[in-house]
Length: 428
Image (cartoon, rainbow, N blue to C red; front, top):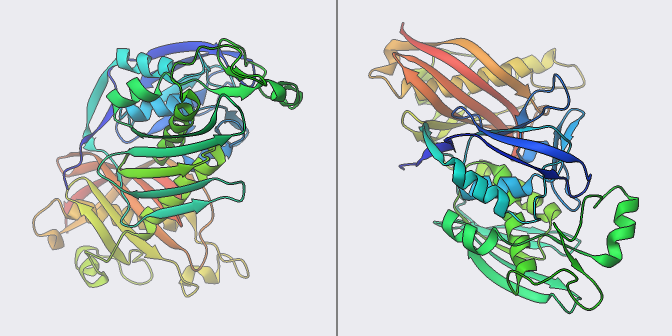
């Protein structure tokens, strides 16, 4: 399968403005980033704070916006910027922010979309991650949200909203998320709120920066600060929020999403269900354990790969490690509380990556892989007996038998570990 290349910005862009909830003025720079680094964000107003990924594993809150965080550091309302990045197909970017919340601008996605258009796109020398499903995924929440995500050759969203207000009522539409269509049909749609909710929201520390300049405000009879940009502007903004929240999956989405009463909470739940399904549907082995033992020198108890389920030669590999209570390391790590050692999770990741390297040479049985360096290693959650780790590794660089790879491990769709690995292929 021929995957298109990853993308970053051709040059950096700057935006500034109030946060719709915090009311704090902040400046945001969106900068080009190296291949395979993903979308990351950094709080410049908190000295010593490292950049962290804007992905599903880092979602902290979903009330009236999507908040991401790592440790004690959080950033609110990332969905508008993420929607614009997704529409332009940007895989790698660094967001430098000097405040707690991204600027709301005029309440739509348009300011971000146009800023990125001015920056331009730079293609990179690594394949884009493609998110596909083999079977539909359904998500239903007790609060009324309902979603179906199905396989598709393009990212498309069909949505319905219902509000007991004369200016909204029931609205339905279907939209392509290709960059031109997004810019025309979704980007101008503004966020909205109800005048009757303002006092209670502000008492809870929310909507402190909301105003007629950045939010459509609905009174009892209609919109207080019209005119609308579209008759169904409310629906279109909700669809844009779905785009922004699902962008936390990373990569290019080949999905048709049907959403009933979408919300940030529901969008993130759908994203996690898709992530889980992608891991579960990796499929039958294309390299089984017998073939793995021909390529890798490891043997019990250090052979930590059970099967390879996907390979794009020289680009990407997906492998599986089934974790059972019979693993010898559980005898001492820890008695009565078995947890897979983090170093062995990274070792298993490296072994999957080693098989990708072996695919790049003739007569791989004559070679061995030596790992030279690890960078940006993170363990996100414990791995315990009964888990199945799905490792995804992408080739970032490969020159003269030395390569750099980016690896991630998932259990039930949740990120458990990630690292960048550098390795060399040498003759035995």
